[in-house]
Image (cartoon, rainbow, N blue to C red):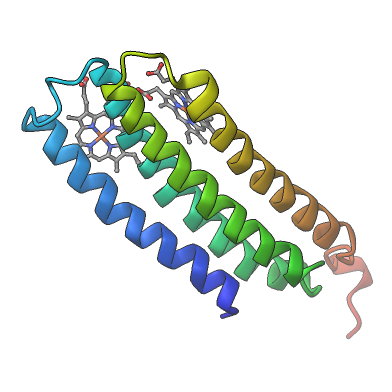
Length: 148
Ligand code: HEM
Ligand code: HEM
């Protein structure tokens, strides 16, 4: 496995622990005094979805999709940049959802959205890297053109 793939998977594992722990703490009512408890729930939802689920999909995708397509990954450099963009976007987004939960001001637009845009930029890099990798893949062999 490449260090980038391991980075995505480690981020997913850390998010899993943070996400389920936060879920239990929410259920215990630890954040019920927040100004906007719904935003704390959103921090939990997104550390699980953008952190655990998406980062695992990126990591496993980077490992297996080039192998399935029979071509090397289009750019290891893009993958490495994407990893750090997504880690920064995820951390910022989750922290901002949390702060928004306790803030009087509505921090969605100027706090959550910029980090969301950063995470979305990382997702766009995944799109480009995978699209280019798959575009270079040879067609799958069919029974008619298999050599004996
Ligand atoms: C030990 C594991 C977990 C616990 C104890 C837990 C607990 C909770 C609690 C207490 C809420 C707030 C419910 C409410 O106020 O209505 C919630 C919401 C949510 N959780 Fe979890 N959760 C866990 C794992 C997960 C995982 C693994 C995911 C996603 C992969 C997830 C996704 C969500 C989402 C999307 C919401 C928001 C739902 C909505 O807005 O209706 N949770 N969770
Ligand atoms: C950069 C990416 C994303 C941003 C900036 C973002 C932002 C938001 C915002 C602002 C809300 C409304 C929160 C509220 O009003 O309480 C929301 C809700 C939600 N989002 Fe996302 N989202 C992103 C990606 C995703 C992804 C990839 C998933 C699923 C895989 C997802 C699942 C949900 C769910 C289930 C809710 C409703 C539950 C809740 O937050 O309470 N989001 N999102």
